Image 1 (spheres, rainbow, N blue to C red):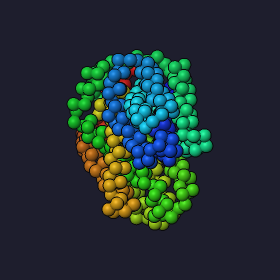
Image 2 (image 1 turned 180 degrees about the vertical axis):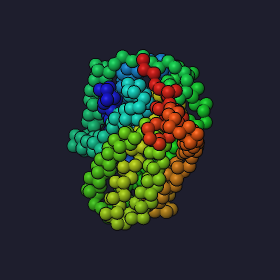
Image 3 (image 1 turned 90 degrees about the horizontal axis):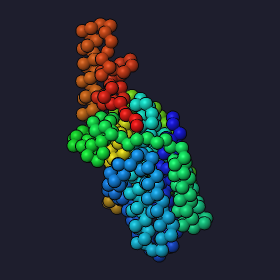
Length: 430
């Protein structure tokens, strides 16, 4: 895997750590800015909203730049927002800082994934996305507890300065070691890149792309409907002490890393199968967690199981989106916006349900979202079924004939239209 893909993971790690930082230091930030904890909570919402709405616009604004130039500019914008947060003298300044950081973070994520895919062979695209997204997984596993520790020990502003240092190091490494790659010029669909803003926007006319994006929203929404409320469920329903919950969440983050690595190796060849299996498993694990929430051992087992199949489907989700659209930064940024939208929807619906139906009710909402996610896969499943039947008919009519490259890859494996096995899905580099 090229070094640059790991550099992208480092950049994503620093930005995800900044995203989670506020959630870990709510009381300290509230005291420092003389506002309530609920107002600090709006800073989390502002960051997510900026990623969802602002990220695609910023990504569109840097399309004319070469990937390396765009990444360095996005590093600079993020740094400006993060430094502004560290120096914030009041709530309004902090709110503006979080909007700037959130917007840059989403655009960077899209550009980083796009470059990672371009630097490897098409058959390794999913694995490259998986490696880059290890930055996201490590942000949950290490970034959040590290920034919380620094903020509690040295003050919340020091946590923002720590993120600033990490980001500067990632930016300098990108400047020194990332290769000079030309911006993508082709304007076709599939895995081809967009030809400037018009070419990138053109792929969004396809209804299938919106359906594919909705799958990602539902996957992440289902996961975060539970993840957002793990802390109160584990303490108030399962009976764990508040001191043990951070350790359980670290274990959950480790499960994320394992699942991400597994999905990364399967995402290219078995994209839809991975998503179908993952969504069904997610629904089952969420239901089991809800039913066994009052049993400590059962709650832990199924919390870790959710960690294996929830956000870890990101490489398969990204691969499917790129095949329905293209590998360009705008498509990938819009995809990250739909993922963030899932976080907002899942956590918001859960918050609305708790006063009426209890702490475990958000988990049942996740079960429903996972079921809806399965429904969004049906058109792809029918398409794969048609290709498999066509390959069977060809084999029956011409025994011993070589399978059509458009219908099979390896022994009995059906190819989805637009997959890496399809010559039309090849990615152009440089």
